[in-house]
Amino acid sequence: MTIAEVGKKYNLTPDTLRYYERIGLLSKVPRTDNGIRNYDDKTCQRIEFVKCMRNAGVEIEILIEYMHLMEKGKSTVKARKQLLEEQKKKLVEKQKNINETIDRLNYKLKLYEEIIAGKRKDFTEE
Image (cartoon, rainbow, N blue to C red):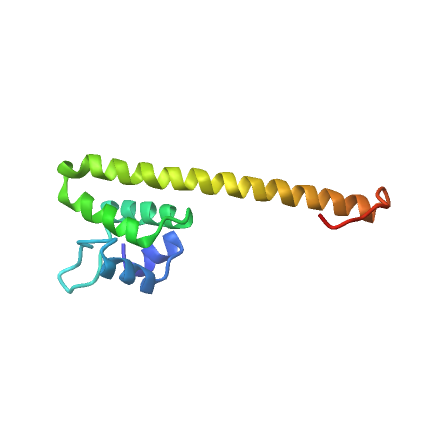
């Protein structure tokens, strides 16, 4: 797949894909004889992984470290697992905070709905 096709498929700009390659998130992107990027399934799987992790808020530096470990092969499996466990722990905590915020927002919205409907006369901002 060309860089344009991959960009369209994953909703990433060609500049972003080049940046990911430059910083080490996508290493060894296959190229044609003319030097044009020709993304294969393995590279696309990495893009999917990186995009998923970035959408969840995983830091670029962590992903770079993970990809470097992955390049070193089987000897780094424990280190990679530990890195992912740490990220999962951070994401679970972040999810807890988001859920608490959503609960607070739901409370406030319900309060405002009651005020607008005239069901609540005693209004104090909480």
